Amino acid sequence: MPKSPPSDLEALKQEITAQYESLSPRLKQVASYIMDNPNDVALETLSIISSRCGVQPSTIVRFAKVFGYTGASDMQRLFRDEILSASPSPSYSERIRQFRKRSDEMDWLAPENVLHDFAESNIIALEHLREVVRPEDLTKSVELMHNAETIYLAGVRRAFPVAAYLAYSLSHVEKRAFLLDGVAGMTSEQSWMLGPNDIVIAVSFRPYANDTAAVAERAQANGAPLIAISDSRLSPIARDAEVCFEIKDAEVRQFRSLTASMCIAQTLVISYAYKYGVDKSATGESRK
Amino acid sequence: MPKSPPSDLEALKQEITAQYESLSPRLKQVASYIMDNPNDVALETLSIISSRCGVQPSTIVRFAKVFGYTGASDMQRLFRDEILSASPSPSYSERIRQFRKRSDEMDWLAPENVLHDFAESNIIALEHLREVVRPEDLTKSVELMHNAETIYLAGVRRAFPVAAYLAYSLSHVEKRAFLLDGVAGMTSEQSWMLGPNDIVIAVSFRPYANDTAAVAERAQANGAPLIAISDSRLSPIARDAEVCFEIKDAEVRQFRSLTASMCIAQTLVISYAYKYGVDKSATGESRK
DNA sequence: CGCAGTATAGAATATTTTTTCCAAGATTTT
DNA sequence: AAAATCTTGGAAAAAATATTCTATACTGCG
View 1 (cartoon, each protein chain N blue to C red):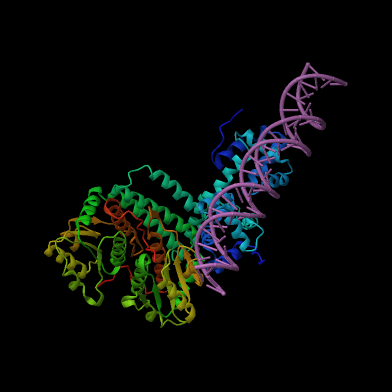
View 2 (cartoon, each protein chain N blue to C red; view 1 turned 180 degrees about the vertical axis):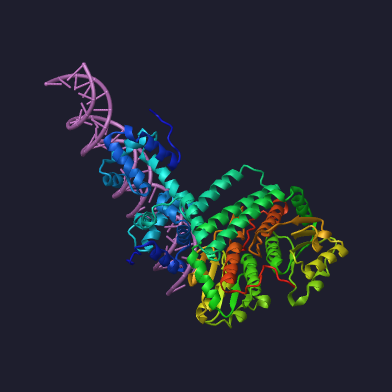
């Protein structure tokens, strides 16, 4: 009897529950093990699973077939997809992949579609951001910011707007902030002075700019803590960072967005302001 | 060279980070993929992983051996154990519910709540943006940009990151772009030269900066078209603008975001690039 | 008690996946 | 510029894993 195989975990679980009573003893054994240990099913091999529930591997294959799958592997895919799409980190690439596929069908060149795609991708990136940022990293950053005499901001090219925003808004919550902007190519001269009582917030994305990496090294050398906003823990600036925010920004057709990075920047400033900042309204835009 | 193989994921990640620089190009590729997609590594087969990061399966085996494992499977075990030991898979909706509950009890000031609010509000702002922007404004802007010899960008204070981003990304699609950054207080001197074949994109939000308004006026006087990104049609820069994007950015507890503005900026650049720009990959960040 | 139908274990087989190996290419050193 | 070393892609071999098959055991029923 070829049933329609449930195509997501929830559906399968319901189906198992419904049919449970009518299953043979061994299959019941399998059923309860599967319901209780979905992760095992996703990750282990048939022989391990089968031995854990006291059954032969072939029994699990039979079980899968009862529910309409072509084999046990077929069923396992459901459990794996569940982890892939529900678990903290990887939803992002998976969702992007799907979104990409959908938007491939549209007319890419019309500006309104570009806007639509961008908005959509940025939304996904923000949702992802919310899930992956660890609260303790935020808290720690706020403490570091609080203890710092001066906060130096480093970021060039694509990262520059983020650094500039940080410098601007920090100074508006009355924190000494200094943007290492490399005007007149003076980045190294500027980073010279930072000492152990200061901190650096460095922003850099692939391909990493040498300037920013140099500032990070200098911070390290001078004993100044470093907060990194980057796209990977492998980046030169993340390596010796006290705290590293690993940000996956949206990418539409080769163009990377800054939305998520800006969002984390804002969060840092405001969290700091709430905890330690001036209490008069310190908005993003100054009164003249 | 038999290294001691790291026995938990955290240790491995640190080891990868530490050794990253000394790895060969292909191995670096593998390293970053692994760091970015741990769940893929845990769940997919070697050939899928390898094709996703553009290498041969054997390369991954070699990678694992560099870090002291007997083979790729050996390394995969770490990633699987990580999932297995993580909390008994609370589903996404469950976690959201927990979060809501927790954050109701906790103070609004906790950084993770700030982040959550910010992400949320920005998402709403983006959804709104998508609806209110008129396609013909985009199209017209793209035409103006195309016809311009040089695009001048004006924006200070909170608007500065947007202007900076525009300047940066336009120059990367090989459009002459010039940021009126007012270094050394030269804004008026800088805007001096703009002529009827140029255009200005001015970004300004309440309370409107005099500098930016002055640039807008100068544009008008010199016969250069003006594209305004602002929060109201009534703003000084919107008044004589050829096209005005009226952007409502998110506001979270007094702080205004820049997400929607950045999004419209990106859209302009990319739409332009699609229609008229160079077709060699013009990404957000230049290669060195 | 014995027959029919179903369930099960375990071995045999088929398939997939991992690992090894080697030649060709690239890079560095001398 | 040649030699030596390291890196890489690809195919062949090995291992692990999944699936099928069959003989046997069990169950319910006349």
